[in-house]
Amino acid sequence: MRKAALLAVHELAKRDPRVVFVGSDITKQNLEKFAAEFPDRYFMEGIYEQHIIGMCAGLAMSGKVPYINTIATFLTRRCYEQVLIDLCLHELPVRLLGSGGGTVYAPLGPTHLANEDIAIFRAIPHMTVVAPCDADEMKRVMAQSLDWHGPLYIRIAKGGDKVVSSDARGFKIGEAIPMREGKDVLLISTGITTQVALDAADLLAKDGLTATVLHVHTLKPFDTARVLHYASQARAVLTIEEHTLVGGLGSAVAETLMDAGQGGVPFARLGFPDVFTEELGSQAEIMGKYGLTSANLATKAKQLLSK
Amino acid sequence: MLVGSGRGHVGAALSVMEIVRVLYDDILRVNPKLPQWAERDRFIFSKGHGCLALYVMLAEKGFFPKEEMMRSCHFGSMLGGHPESRKTPGVEASTGALGHGLSIGVGCALAARIDRKDWRTFVLIGDGESNEGSVWEAALSAGKHRLSNLTVLVDYNKFQSYGPSKDIQDLEPFADKWRSFGFAVREVDGHDVPALRDVLKAAPFDESKPSALICHTVKGKGFKTTEHNADWHHKAKVKPEELALLLVELEGLP
Image (cartoon, rainbow over all chains, first blue to last red; front, side):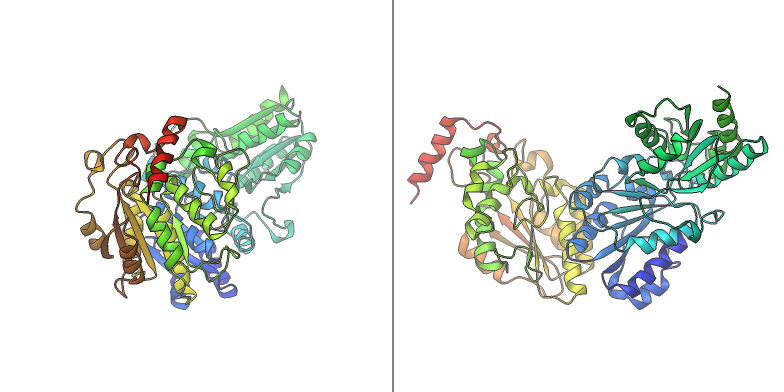
């Protein structure tokens, strides 16, 4: 997924002279062609995220469209004030490509896990937050990123994630995608939990239950219309995210349902509780411990439906 | 503005008044009728709390009507307690949180270089602001990129909110720090208008380096009441008798 994103930046740079790439001491892999072809628009900078955000603000104020890539944790937390003031207050077209959103870097421990990136960026006006589910969808996000107004954060998953998205379903930043439709339960997911939700829908089908899987790739602006539409047709609504339950997808769905007076529907949220996920191991192991699995999602759905 | 709003970072504004005046009178290529003119020089007022000095000059140059100053900080005003680029014509960047402007300036200077444009970037920062690590991140980067189209002006008034800077966070040897980060450095009396004019006309001080001009200033310069007086760092409710004292001194000036 990161590869798809970086190669796409090169393609965009060929099309548009405004495109600038800025890395923060990251590997040159997949950037070689950009660096060779556009040396004056390629910046490999030091490990100073605060400065990089401000610098990209200055570039954007002067007509450029900077794409920044570094590890999601450092791109979201270390420079939060710069993101809020320099990018969002000024509503500048800077693109933040955060590698390893969620628990991708599980073996590296809690300093490297971005489990709250969506929540903290959702809180900032003018910010856009997108979590694509696979590399193909990343390409669609990148294609639309060039002309997107204002700052854009793109959460990059582990890579090699099963491809479940398709051109046929279309893609537009800000519009949730129904991946399959059913009558009994609505499963709402984002990023790579969409694959988990689709697997859960298969498990439910074995029990004769049909599920809608709504892939909310864009967390902000939030597609309240589609969430409410599909929620109104379901007997239960569940959300699943590789993220803290404080302020992420589940929170956004709950807010949406309550605000619209649809809070009566049986509802459950799956995500990380308010803890540091510091178990090490793998992304799959950590997600397993906290129940972010297709089996657990299907079980929870059945429990809600049987109430 | 002090009369209109009864508040402001008075000391911080008075220490940079001559610097801002010389920039707008003699150095900056700007057009008040076209604040967004693509070929303009960029002036990032990073020590945003000193914005009273900036507002006075922008109004003087015709970026907005002088009457706006009487409404500063009031609901719906275009002039806030810190400068905002989306509200005020002539303000390049919204500042107020310290340590942001120099990085923005580095980005502007890089953009000009990419586009092979001759407009320049000037950033005014404070000495207290130089406590922020991000200032030195930006300095590292400016030095690395050898941004000769970037000039940082440091308002070295040696005072911050609590009191003398040397008691809070000494910056010395200050000029050496900038030099070691790759800047060509000069120092000047920040209240000496002819000297400021001469040294700024000489920038860049080195054709292959960013320039740093350390301006030795007096916080609250110009009024006996405010000079070297931490009480005037920020005033939220200026009393009529305090204002009267300033006005008496102002009218007594030659």
